[in-house]
Image (tube, rainbow, N blue to C red; front, side):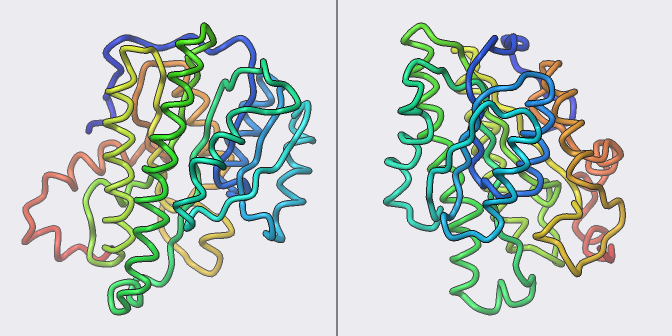
Length: 271
């Protein structure tokens, strides 16, 4: 999927009102995107996160400061796949405002882990795929159905913002379990966007490179960016009909080259 991917039906106008739902309610990237969207259009926010997370209070405070007209929390450990349906239903239907449509859903949870332990310990391999691939696809499918029902009921189409990674575009030896798990997630949301396009439900796949966040503390990488830069790129992409946005922008030509390198050359690259 090139950086010039477009939705066949053209861009869907931003819904005039509605709430924002963030799956991965303590994610630095997800919160930054939510803040940027609230700055443009305040509204109610639902954070879906582990209820015992020590970062939840700060996440709630950030949403209020950004302009959320109300913040509620739906508890969910995404590893509990059987709990997904109830949690998504609760997140997408605010009992305090049953007529409030959902404007934007951000899916921003994931795990990085130790890249060497991830392939040498099958339990860690399964855990990474459970969160990054299976849980993301499960929640994405449930959210899509909720937005379709909202659309059929005469409400706005809504949109899904799925946070993937440039690691998904071509799996590298240095973090191949993470990259492979994100590749599965990425492909699902690309396809979901194509499937939902006839109903004008927008899916934007976000492929950041290394982002300075709580998940990457203690790690270093080139071309690193802050969550706010990712958020700015997302806001700009939403004003177009793009299906994919890479951050920083330099990754668009870089990945176009890297994806097409012969394996014998790609294996020699030390990154």
